[in-house]
Length: 307
Image 1 (tube, rainbow, N blue to C red):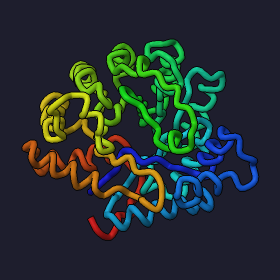
Image 2: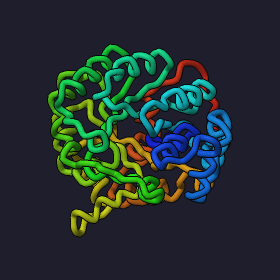
Image 3: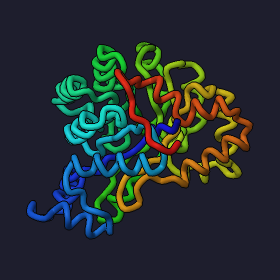
Image 4: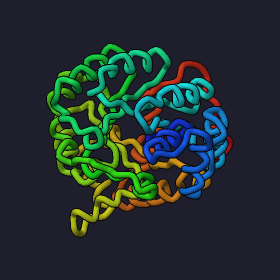
């Protein structure tokens, strides 16, 4: 079984937000943005969700985490996950410094969303701040909910292509700053994507002392260029040795159409795990079993025809 722990849900609201930041008029804004990018315009949230289901079926993917990729778009992912509860696990981006942050956490929990995504470099706040601590406390009261924290290097290619500024500050993305909160909330899964996105050592250090920390393997992991000679094989070999196969979550970082689900990432990572000496059981955990265990489905699940 393949489960993808990292898929961005680029809804009409996502593109509308980007267009508003460009100063485009409201009418036709979504089409103008997708046209400039050369991407397919999503007709609606429902149509995009259905298209992703078809894409997952085509590649034999059982389930996927869908991430609402702009603050305030959690309703889009909630609708997609509600329409396809056996296939999608809803995550959403949250700026914990906003006055309505806890209201959004409460609304999202009530509507079945299972992950809060923090981007400290984007929204420029410290991970050991009171604002983040209150989010952890709120999430701890909703069993089965995880906190996803983007650490290390952050780049948003779509913003660069549209000429939008990206005033991100990497000082705010150190995994070590999560240690106190992770230890204080041992039942809250903490997911760090892209193996720490350049802070691999720090992510491993955190995971070594906090058993509720997970690493997501998503994207091509281009951050490896910051460590001369490092290969994806060595990344997997080290992560398996320090974290164990039980705390690695396969992800692709898929997002837009017509590209769709990025099969190459799966193939490359499976090959790297094989070269790193992972057993078949370990690979099964990483590529699907762990995510399915973290976010179990109540009731029967419809699996795709091809695995």
